[in-house]
Image 1 (cartoon, rainbow, N blue to C red):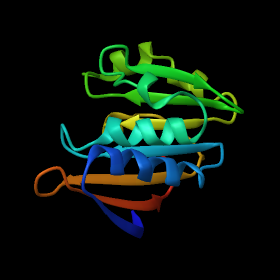
Image 2 (cartoon, rainbow, N blue to C red; image 1 turned 120 degrees about the horizontal axis):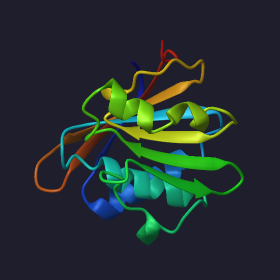
Image 3 (cartoon, rainbow, N blue to C red; image 1 turned 90 degrees about the horizontal axis):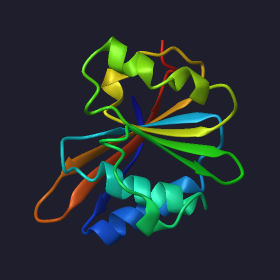
Length: 147
């Protein structure tokens, strides 16, 4: 990952606001990889990204841990994918993620290390790390397309 910027947020509200700010920079087609431990704030940042894109209200964005994929619509489709519960290639194949890449979209992926899909779409990498109390260190960069 090529690091381009680092941020520190001190609350969930600040993390959501940062997501809204970053959303203004996203242009489809793009994959956004949200990396971090459990509870690092991936879904919280996704709330800001998705609401900042105008695809849903912040309160309507929830973790897709059990449904695995949430789809939102604005000027282009916005997908929020959580691969935490994906155990193997068969689970991944049943999601039909290939269909997501049929048209330009913005695809947010939590636990992207489980993604086994090739695409030439640009990738934005966002790493979230726990700080003291509610603080989060958020590192934003880019990486090569998924091979």
